Image (cartoon, rainbow, N blue to C red):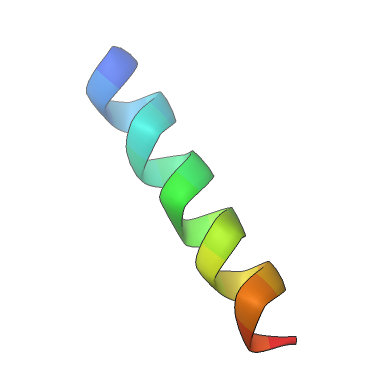
Length: 19
């Protein structure tokens, strides 16, 4: 589960960085 949470956080961070 930690892997999934880490991926989600990474995606959200990239999304915020993009916007």
